[in-house]
Length: 556
Ligand code: GLC
Image 1 (cartoon, helix red, strand yellow):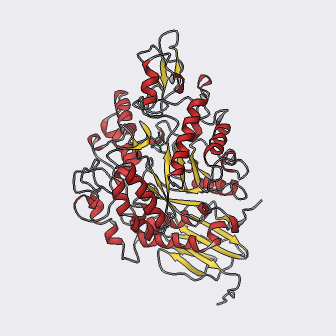
Image 2 (cartoon, rainbow, N blue to C red):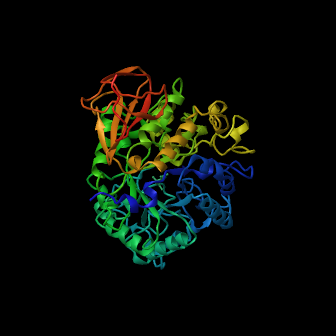
């Protein structure tokens, strides 16, 4: 059952762009990015060619988790603007053919949401059951040993004598998805947003909403898929929208449950296996295991295979929770430009919908702050406290944070080489990366060799070529330790993508029987117009050759 390419949904051809609003563009000098700032940069996004923006949360929030702790789903945080600004953003984006995708954070609310304030006020409150309450264990401790992602127990004892559940910070109480009235209110809220003209939702930690707390089951719980289906029927039915579920627990085996075309669930999910594969050590992401390209390719190839005929892949290297791509996988020093382009080439020519995380298209690198005072992220600060209480030195913690803290990707967008990178006229809420003097949009906009120009070209190619959108995917040289290569095929047309993932020159022996002649679609080095059975690839070299069915094979 292949996809009917003529009637394929719009989001299969589009490229997404994630905005972390707090750090994108400040318009009023308070040091915090805002909606008017985003509106002022819509032409930049249109010039890049993206089809939709995923906006990290802009709802009313005490900002304990920078907006992932919502206190009112139908209001905009004052530091980000007003509902009028939001409506203008949706309309102005639409005028440029860009959809706005909102972040849907419904596993939990803020503890300052009116629902939670009512629920915690008394055990008889009408909305008490909208959250997850349990009596203490016989020894007075938490009801079970569920742990919070941000460190420590997932239970906090409240004045009522019961514990409430929070799989994240204690200021983020989990909603009780067993409660039908709560679910109905979430659905109504989603319809309200759809009616304002948004293009879809990115669904925060959606794999948690079917949990069975008493059995200690959080991800992938028994009710999960019924709840997603119910949600979609109640909100998205009959609307041409995109839905992307964040699903840390998804595997190639479970993926189609979320995004199989007959499931009535989601357009696609964000899957993380290519990232979490290296977080298996005792300190998880705070001390990742050494990167291994063969393993990395194996994971991605499995995802491509699993969703080859049904479902759809999302493609991303980075987001607001992850390190910067060029720091994690490339070389932000000597080979910054070339390695950033290599990473983009490999990602954008795979099958799926690619997502660009703000600044990635400039080759922005990790902040790597040298002092704990520079960090703002609740997870980093909680972990710092817990790990240093447990005996870890500050220096050791900071070394891990420089690799994996979420703040690495949250520093202000680098627009210019001037004060605060052109992000704000005030004092930014988090430090600007000093490398903005070299790495900024102004320096790249008119430079045809810039990382930005490379992204523009890749995004345009996807808009133009069905081969890139729908072509089948075949890994080449899966066991090569330094080269990421694959082939795409559609109706006799083929694309070969070859990338040296390392800073060393490497040699590559291609499997026999491949077409050699081609047209270079894109490269980050010298143009090549043919493949040789043995090739030497320059450091981080990446290119794609198009083999058209009609092009006569060239013989030398
Ligand atoms: C998701 C978000 C992350 C947030 C968490 C809790 O993983 O991407 O930023 O902290 O959910 O909402």
